[in-house]
Image (cartoon, rainbow, N blue to C red; front, side):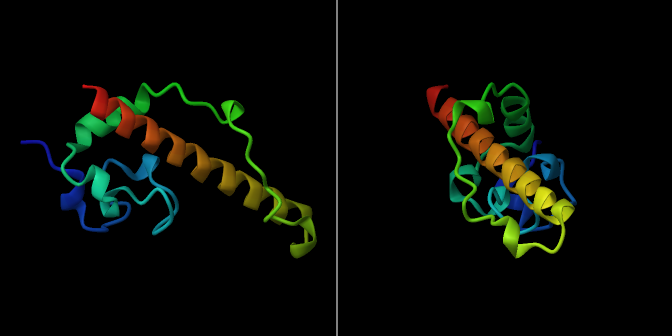
Length: 103
């Protein structure tokens, strides 16, 4: 029997969804999202892996990440990369939710 996402109960890093979640306790935080509570983990992974969303299709503003708040350029670049990664994972989660509803 396949395990449900809601059964994971915030055991970050101990499940197969780790590549699809944001940093621990950041969005998307899949096992805490009610919309995915009853979704099988294997089903989510299949849909996420076949998602066609792209950050290029969205206009994100990174004005909240100000280079002046960082002591070095590499820290700023790391913050931008983390923002983009979590934004992409959130878009994939929204795409998975939409595709589950379309089934």
